[in-house]
Image (cartoon, rainbow, N blue to C red; front, top):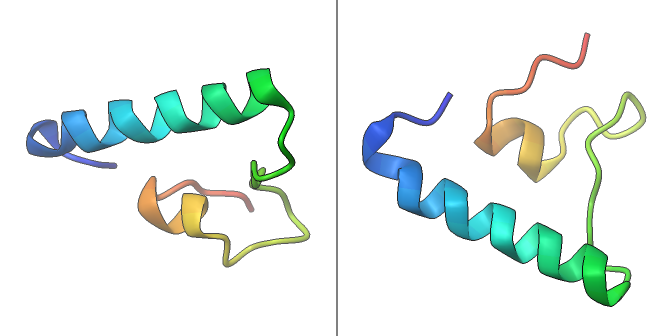
Length: 49
């Protein structure tokens, strides 16, 4: 997981994702089993197995 020093970056990424969802602009990339190497799973160290 991101440590405390990266909270600002994490919050900004969340804001970007929420904004994209609200505007339905098609740029949101969801992490799922079909995209195991997605940037979000890498950045947030998400275990998708």
